Image 1 (cartoon, helix red, strand yellow):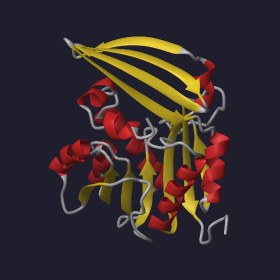
Image 2 (cartoon, helix red, strand yellow):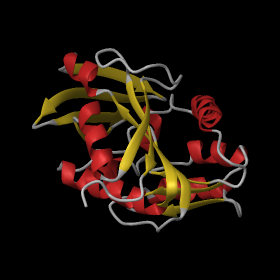
Image 3 (tube, helix red, strand yellow):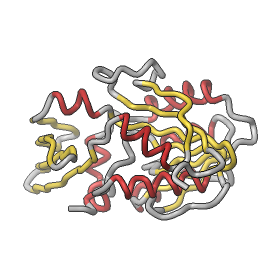
Image 4 (spheres, helix red, strand yellow):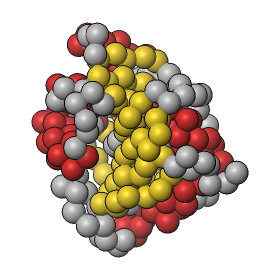
Length: 248
């Protein structure tokens, strides 16, 4: 299921399962992030893997021209209901380039990275980000902290949300965090899977440097508190583009 994300992210069940990740949460995080970043008034943003656009919309509401990119056509269709001249959404695969010297800031949030089979593919994504940023442009990436997650494996949980039952198991298989999701919706049953590379914060930092970035800050949650390797739920890195790729 190397292309699991092309199926799962475009279902209504995905959005039901993660409905707690709502606009209120997104707005609070984006407000704190923008306060930290202090962008110029004319700064341009791209939210890579934007989903339905909850983070992109808040960035735009804060006064910045924003583009959201995501592979899930249904999510982009919904995001486009609120599009404007300064807020645009497009279907796009992050494995493909999306411009050169185009954006001052690029964000990749809510673990929208590491879906592939090799670190080499992730490096290619980061190189596309590097290309799309202007000189000294800023990249913000938000990933899970895999160390405390894996420490609690295997995980079995059941959730009922809006009358839909989700039976979920998580385990580590061949350096991937594999989440199997059985869905029971009335008489219908569906099975999906999430496969996330178990990328440590050290590996992610190394990939960013290889792609031509300099690390500016590392935080451990959406409150932008200090990172703790064994306890923090998130790996939130802020980095800036350097003029020459580090691996050239």
